[in-house]
Amino acid sequence: MDDFNILCTDLLSVDRVFQLTDWFGKASGSKLNKEKTKAQFYGPWKNSEKRGLQFQVTQEEQKILGVKFDTNCEGKTNWTEITQKVKQRLGFWTMRNLTIEGKILIVKAVILPVFLLISSVFIPPMRVFLELQRDIFYFICDSKWERLKREIMTKPKEKGGKGVPDLYLFLGSFYISTHFKQAMDIFNNPKTNSINRFWFGSYLRKLKLLKSDFKKPVAFNLPPAYAFIQKFLQHFKLEGEEIGILTNHRFIISVVQDREPATPVRGLLRGDATTVWPNVGHPVLTNRLQDLSWMVAHEILPVRAVMHSRGMSATSICPRPGCGAPESVRHLLWECSAARDLWAEAGSLQFPYLPAREVLDLQLVLYGVSHQKMEKKDFAEMWLTLATIKDAIWTSRNLLVSRCRQIPPWL
Ligand SMILES: [Zn+2]
Image (cartoon, rainbow, N blue to C red; front, side, top):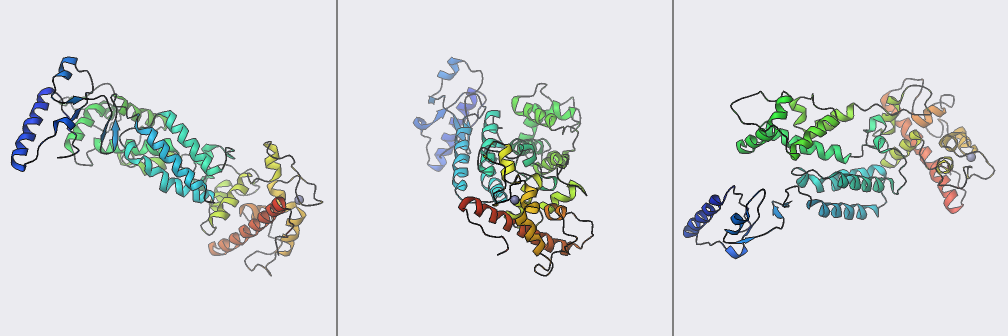
């Protein structure tokens, strides 16, 4: 026998465990090594009781199925290791040259799974949430300069965000859905279910998810593990949701995200933002082009006027020789003479998917909104062409700034 954890409620049960293991040993030929056996006391025990055992009593934390339980049973010792692991993985992926889209995928596929086991048992303290969420944002933004508010970054793509996981919402939903599943006995484990309903029952009754039953005992004060659930549901205004939602963490996250309003697009003159954001994340665009279109719509592409207004560039003037105008996103992609020349040349002759010159205007180029109705397929081809040309303008501008090389984007 190796690596066993046995939970006992009194000293009598401890004796009984020894009797049973001896009895089992007689049949199997195995023997319990008492020198290697350790006991840990949780809760109010008398010192005389603690001394009565035949083996070592320890104050160290216990690791049960990969989860550490400290003497206060708050699970606080789990987070140092997890924080280190997350930092290490983020550090490793920082060295790759990834797009924002690519980095978000890494966070979802590589970082979030690190938490899943522990956070189905313990919820991290706020300090850990804040530290790790900050690390994730630094990783995605490539620096300490966060171009947009985090609340916008975490919105879903069709509302102007990038769908960056909100750690508190994600881990909280995962944790509470596990407890609601236990309360509804979805795992079909009657013992867990009974304990859960005893501690959690008063709140479940208040939420009208459980009928009052005076024959069954119920605790009136929520212990910290369940008090978190109440706090979480109140914070996200989820107390009225159905049990079908509360038992699935994905549904909980979508309920919260669906309530978010679409972020307005400042430069938009016609149509509304709800048409712009789906264009920005259009599946026809590669990750790089999605990032570019998204930064254009938020006006956070690091052109000089944007950088200057945040004190990160000495000048706000366009780097094209002889231009002299402030370099805004609109200037770079439409108003600058270099861009104008390009758009003048770019007709349906060179680019068969572009519309006639008269139709091509700033709103169509920047946001993909047009007066004309278009077939979905035609729009996709036109939008990809426009995004590729914008990327060429931006790349040519960056070459000009970084290597002082003047390369017209149309060559
Ligand atoms: Zn210019």
